[in-house]
Length: 595
Image (cartoon, rainbow, N blue to C red; front, side, top):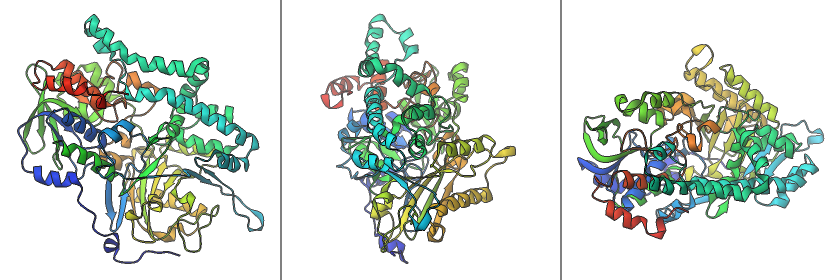
């Protein structure tokens, strides 16, 4: 069996300095007193926004409070020799046009697409030493049907129809991801001509309706019903239903029996990598390499990125418009606009002077649902997990199932429901839902030879424990031990392979990455906080009640925020920005039109 030895750093070798870091070293200490635009936070969304603004001639600076860029999409060597995607760990929903227009491949982005992509082993008592069953799903439909037929021949026949049904819904919704919802507040305030122009944002909704056609009622049910109800109408076997149901609850404080959870079923078919719909993959070098590629593209065009520069406050003029930011060290940086990649809560409740925001707006932001069930555990191991349902080879080399999202405690949707109910009582789940990924099965740069890095996205864990208790080191370790015990049941010997671990509970995710409540989406992806209502009703168009302040992070609708913010900047500040004429000519270029 392959194992790793000493000299971990030497085994990994020295990695080259990304272009953005070289550019950063050139700009550090040369902070200018004024920019056209300031972006708060160097998460990947903020970096994308900065890259596009700079491409259009808008002199842009990005300020990041941590020592690394990327926000949750960061690679850190928290255990010597092992490189972890410490929070975000899989890539799929990066828009194809951003991938191509920012030339991310040219700037070093390399992807490992996964096929197969899902593995659910069973815990079964098998007579005569028979290997327990498992469910392995990939892009080969015939092989998928063969796998599903172990549990139900009826389900095997239904699965291609289900996938086609969901693909059609994803095709209809996909254009909405590139279009801003109608800004209802702005719609009430502008001229008739501007209102007519704004109605063009309804076109994707019309197109979606045309695609769905007569089946619209069935699709409406998918968006609003419990995931369990949707899946029950298609399938009878619990291993298949529970495996699919994980897509409906991952990262969300919900369970398959709660209305609205069906919408998130779409996430496993909505992704797109390198032209392959529904593909999910690992980033070579970890998720931080994605952020490095975006930053490299941005700095190539002139963006200035500053790390360990915390924005303490948004500056507002006496006339009630943004005029820059104040850093924690007291430095003042003037700008005509500020784009915040921070959460809506941090942006409007901490950074923005409250006297410039309507009380009702502030109250709505304060009431956003940010509950998160996720505890992320990063694990360094000296050998691959050896699953009873899919034994390793004698030499311990990666097998197809090792590259998958491996679902544990997912043999039955009732198990997921019970795990959720534990958290409602303020208790970590007795049998947590576990999504186990081994990116080093495809990317050998992450660990020394024979060793591997494992990402465990586990739920459900409450932010505050029963009795109002906070998480402490003992509680963290007790929960991680419970998770490891569960893995040990599926893959005996796992606990003995562990070299080190990093445990991030919801409060830890909030503290380290600025995720409110530990929520990886900034606020819940429930139907009452999507599209027209993200982050709050009447303010879904990225602009805020404060003129010149925009959202560009996960708390806003996931359209091409950077372009829409740019269009808004052009429309609302044409009198004050001397680069508007340049923007107008640049935006006419076909390479940057929405599509």
